Length: 188
Image (tube, rainbow, N blue to C red; front, side, top):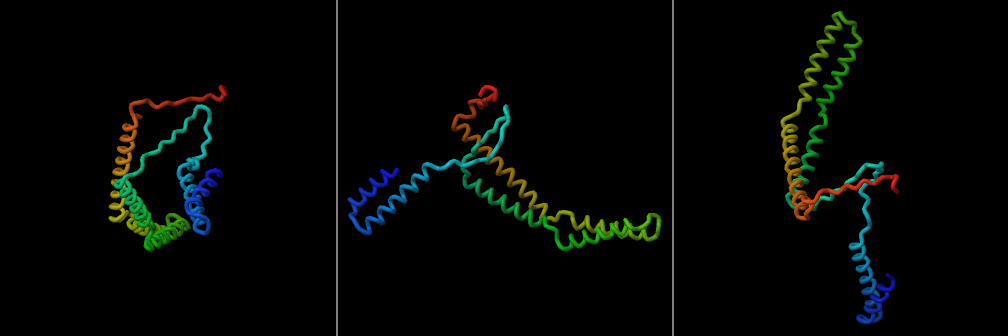
């Protein structure tokens, strides 16, 4: 490749002349040629590191580039997932209720069954348990977010499936059966 770089530099020096302008133009053209070569001759990208045993197969399926609608749904799904994570974080009231329930359960465990203190501790544990259960029920926002997320996920999956099927049909892959080759280690 050094020959082509030298030849390009000579052609530029003939066209532009000698001096600072020729040097800048030569370096810029060499840079552009190198970047174009990198764009065309891309390095291999490792997909995964898998160890296969004899008889096992590994299939890699590349799906088509996403369209605007698919990108929009993917962004919406990511936003709903982050909202769902934020809503799932326990609030101060929930944490406080959990601490009180835990301490009530510990006190109940220390009391001897059949005594008046055991009965009072059991009643206190039951009321704190009911409060904890009430505070831990999903809110309307959580339920609505979960429903929206499942709807968006279904839509996104159906769009991706349709696009993948369309590409397979366009390429003629849906008519041809998939070829599976079995290699036996003893044959090597």
